[in-house]
Length: 338
Image (tube, rainbow, N blue to C red):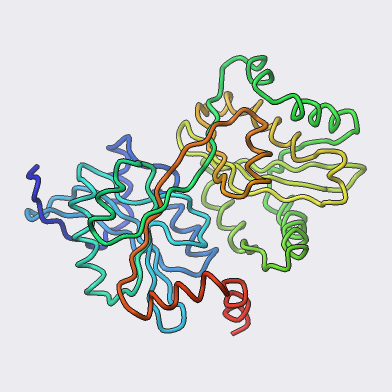
């Protein structure tokens, strides 16, 4: 393939997308067609499933591009903030240096004001900056799953092991719901409680959880665990997976029951199941909030950086991003009411 190949972004159908994914070891859960369905149902964004074609019309790669309107601005990203998608970006036998000009041309045609991109490869930082992106390094936490459960247990920090033992001795029971009806209402109620304490709107709707279940559970790629104490569901956590990688997507709990450490037990019960699920790497998704990072690190995970880049393509976008950074929660509440 020529180094200066000109690529063009064009929408493609599901069958073509799926066939391309099957033929590559690249990509993750967040490149799957089903994940884009989840995002559309849960966040009200449109996901453009775009193929990257060379000048001979040969499909060289894929790019899921989320798009939403905020007031008069048209925002797009792979992935886009607020869509519970920690990374995405292009995949295929192409370089980022070849993809970004094609994305810029697409953005011009569609009159996009703002672009975001999240990538796992830190080496792409220079390419992003050379193409006008402001780039930041964000953190996540990874845990490589050993085959031996004793080694897994010994990898937990002492305080974490003690919390697991406390939950077990207190009588906290962890179970796996087999139907959406078993967990949707209690989980969503807990989620609302968590964010009400923070005076925030819950980020996930019932429609999101429903789409997540309908798109990933039938293929065995979703595990939901709930913690019950004295007959009441007091916590829950959600773990999707793709091939040999598992993800900690979301967790909720009733703060009144933190004393019996249900969250630690839920994580431990997931880790015990991980090897049987074929999971070799557990991505705990995010380490940028210190208190949450401390909890995740107690299971033996280690930090890994990834790239977040954004590009304001208009003056309005530049102003809008500055305002949103300062007034994001107020704007979210306004948009939800309007």
